[in-house]
Structures are given as C-alpha cells and as structure tokens.
Image (tube, rainbow, N blue to C red; front, side, top):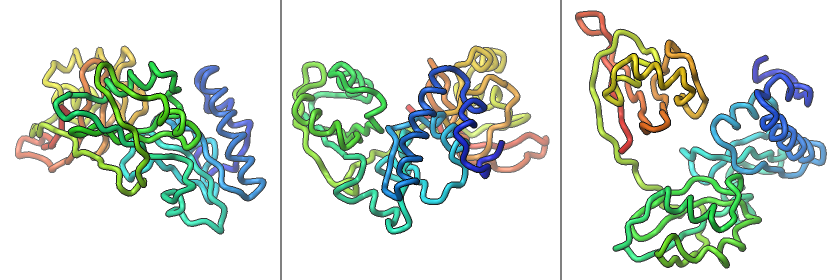
Amino acid sequence: MSPGDTMDRNNIEKIAHNPEDRVLLAKLWDKINAGIRRCIPANTCFLSPRELEMARFLFGDEPGLHTFGGYADAERKMLCYLPEYLEEDSLYEEDSPLVCLRASFFEGDTLNHRDFLGALMGAGIGRETLGDICVGKGCCDFFVTAEIAPYIQQNFLSAGRTKLHISRIPLREAQIPEPEVREIKDTLASLRLDSVISSGFRIGRSLASQYVTAGKAAIDGLPCEKPDKPVPEGSKVSVRGLGKIKLTAINGRTKKDRISVTIHRYV
C-alpha cells in the first residue's frame, strides 16, 4: 500500500502492528474524517514520528492534511485537517489547536528535558497532550493541546524543587535552542544502520548490530530491527541507552573506495 491510496477505514487492519496501534488509528480516523465530512478544521493529539508515519499511510494524499508541532522542525506533531478556506498559516493564530507555554525559573537551577517531562507527567498530564519540550537558560518553552493549557497554567507550579512561572506566548515567539552536537568525520564501508551506529557512538559493529536486533534503534523515529538497513543522508538515528546521532552528510568516495561521512552526535 502506498500513501496515495484512497482513504479507507479498513486500512487500519493492514497498518496496525498491535492492538494499541489499532485503537490509536481508529481515533485518528474518527477525528480527521469528521472534519473532512463537515468541512471544518480537525486535529489529532500529538503524535510520535512512528505514529505520524502510520497516519500518513492511513490518510494518504488527502487534500488539506498538514502536520504541525508549533515550529518547523518539531519532532512530535499533530495531524491537522484544514478546509480549502483556511491557509496553513492559520495554525499559528490565536485559535490554533496547540499552545506554547513558557515556564520561567531561576537561572541558577539547571533543569533539563527529562526534569520537565517527568514533572508534567507527575502532574497528571497525558503524553498525547504534550508536544516538544525546549529547555533554555531560565526558561522552557513547551507545546501542549489548547484544551489542556488552562489546567497546566493553574497546576504546573514546580519541577522538582524548582518553582515555575507559567505564561502563554505566541507560537512564533517560541525559543527553540540549537542542539549541542559533536561532529564526527569518518569513512564507512557501507551506509548500513549498524555501521552508522558503530561510527556515531564509537562502539564495535557487532555490538551496534545487537542494539538493532534487540529493537533499540530507530531511523527518524521509526523502529528498525534490520542491521543492514541503509541510512539515508540527513536521517536521525536514535539508540535506546546510547542517544541520538544524525547522518549529516555523505561526502563521496575515498581513494580506497570507502564512503566519507559527517555524523553529528547530540550531547
């Protein structure tokens, strides 16, 4: 099946890998299809890259569908349906289905992504209502569904022992910090997933292969258990327990017929 297939609810059975996928896809179908039938805006909850890929196959090339996470390179995004009378820029307006909240705190306190995610989950916030969490110095901008925003503003008052001041800001004013990366230049025999992981994390290829076959690796958010899967240029590879890398550039062949690459390791 290709993304261009006609929309068909029965495709859920072909796409879902487990009962949880089936339930999720059914919910996505009901929300988006209701908007399409009534010609009104509709949106899903926040989805992971893997969930977005399943949704892409479910809805195909249906006109009016957009993915939106609050900024261009967001990892977690909503699937949104906009009728013909609305432009994509309308997703940034006051009545957007998502909101950016800024948590301000004392700069001397060092908080990270895990601190904020743990505190939000501890406050009873469901993961599906949370988008990306962007931590900077003295503040953290994070994206949530419009429905849950008032609850968070009233109840999310601290992360651990650090007091927070929560305010709503326009989506276009969100501060997205540049990720810290370590650049690695290397040559590879091939662009196999285990080779890229071996180079990016400085581990043996056999160990890299074990991580992959154990189901701990993903390419652009999509789980992959095949060590020989080719990694496209620009792809991000995450390995549970090791971190995340990006195959930033493929620089051609060397005189010894190896592939010259540039890899960024996120630190």
